[in-house]
Amino acid sequence: MGARLGRMDALIRQGIEPIPPDDGVTLLLKLLAQPSHPQPPTTTVVMGRYTEMPTYRRELPELPLRRYLEQPLVYYPNIELVVESTLSTGTDPYLDDHQFQGERLLPAVMGLEAMAQAAMALTGETVAPAFRDVTFNRPVVVSATAPLTIRVAALVREPGVVEVVLRSGETAFQVDHFRATCLFDEPGLRDLKPHAMPHAAQGAEPQVALHPTRDLYESILFHRGRFRRLNGYRFLKATECVAEIAPDGDAVWFSQYLPATLALGDPAARDAAIHAVQACIPHATLLPIGVDRVSLDTALNSSEPFSVHARERRQDGSTFVYDLDVIGADGLLRERWEGLRLRLIANSSFRGPWPEALLGPYIERRLREWYPSSNLSVVCVRELAPARQERSDRAVQSSLGRKISVGRLPNGKPFVDEGVEVSAAHCGELTLAVSGTGTVGCDIELVAERSTQVWSDLLGTEGARLAGAIARGLAEEPGTSATRVWAARESLKKAGALDDAPLLLVSAEADGWALLASGRLRLATWRTEVRGCAGTLVIAVLLRVDDESL
Image 1 (tube, rainbow, N blue to C red):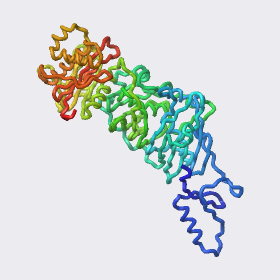
Image 2 (cartoon, rainbow, N blue to C red):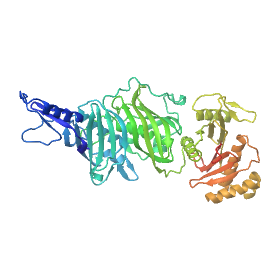
Image 3 (cartoon, one colour):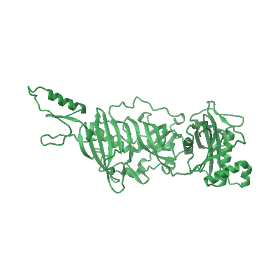
Image 4 (tube, rainbow, N blue to C red):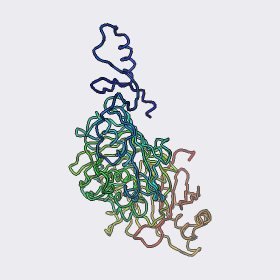
């Protein structure tokens, strides 16, 4: 980075004054064009990069006492700064809390902290910058037994704009692991309001039956210790969530011999805001790979609770793009992340039993993988209320994300007056509900082992043959496959199909899904276990696909 500097410094007898790169040559030409008489009153030297000389010594200001500014290698105030720091589990104990597949990774939020410290030290700014064009190109892996040196290089591109990269001794400092542009003249967030939250999330308390420690951190999320800051969810769907982040003013990030001041404030709250999105894609592990822009108000206070509102902008293959608002206890914006890119690194090994709150996001995601045009919203809730209609109404409202009047057709099918189709089903305390703009249907059934003859009587000859084909394709118990066919038939009835509508097996998936078809109607059936429910459940969801290629 320094080799591309191309900067010129005007060294004047009284001191040093940096000038922009394009002005160095211009200044030299002006000096050469001056008449030789009279002689200028001072001697001016114009040069590029230089080292210490016996005839001229620079007096450099001291760098701030910050963790990631340990050893300066190159320092030209307001021009360039290259610093190194050595990381280890002894000096940086948070690394033990951020392990993925046995490797200790420098958290992306700590990478931002290191880059902010360098940019602020270089420019003398005391207020943290905004970030633009952030990329996390390659993880920084720190061994449990050997320290690792990281190098942060910052370069002023123009007033208020600093380009920063973070490199690692692991790759001989030849690779930009992280990169960002720091902006010091950006307007703050005080005049901006958080994006409107879903109606269902506007209460003050968590509304989703999800316990982060038990249901996420012990199964889906890899974060430990300091980074376990999710406190609950007020809203959770496949493409949007509102989560609560608990304060922790006692967390210690560095050893006692290292400076503790953090330019950006609480890194665990910021990391929790990012990994809160994981519940929207519960069957995969995501890691951040970049963000278009991060706007900050003030450093995050570790003693303050926050909420995060995340909304999916789009999905590009295995990359999910989200916008995040981090909101303080006073309802004001603390941070806004625009265009956060999360990449699917690995499919989760989690196979259940599932918390019911994660079933909806998971089913929606799988449906979109097979049927990209699907707009179904799916929820599964647990209620003890005995009145099924009341439970159905609340589940339907939850699938729509708002309070709405739910009516009933003569056959008991629920409907709403908004051009949206809805369906609901019950199994014990669980209620499954789906909604969408096209034909929809659903069912949830407890797997029952019955004799071959009983199943044949219930399903008919063709239905029994279909169950046999599913059982062979998935290598599962005949009773489970027969329950799939039964649930699929129930979903067809709720969608208004004829009792004898043909039903065919399309595919048997390795993770326990069986896809069926009846004309342009598609049915996805899944075998699973739900926490707190005895036995195996089969879930069936129906939608209409008008694209004949699907």
